[in-house]
Image (cartoon, rainbow, N blue to C red; front, top):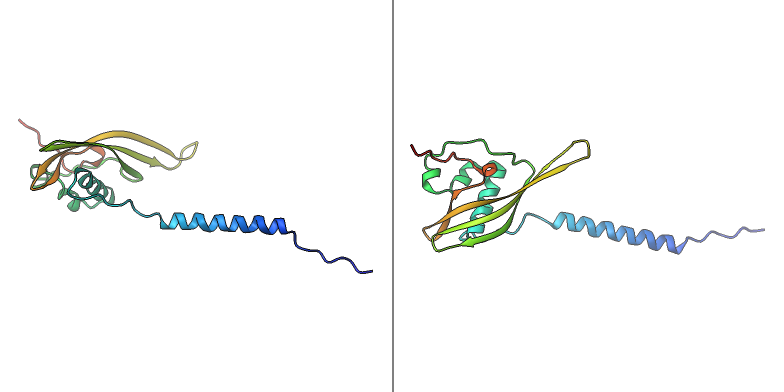
Length: 153
């Protein structure tokens, strides 16, 4: 007597194939999602985006280039807030002829803790002024401030 040869279960093969395709698609999405698209540097949003990125990356020299001369020329360095794990997202922009307000959402992620990672978020506003056909930052939210504001006596 010959025992029948076991045939592979086609349902199992289909399920494994679908799982493999889903894993490949997920990997493609993860590895092709890069840095956010850079906004036009001649806009208030573009200036805030580049300044924030420079501060988060620790490139203070690049960040100072986006500040008004009164702050940038005689910059008294301050310690920035907690920028490790920070994400800055544009909320809105109010643009006038000679000034602009850029509202952002700053989200800082912290690892660890009893219940895993946690996040802190706050809305803040950058104040910008028009200068030479572009924009410069007059004041930044405290976690992203690298130069101490001048005290008027």
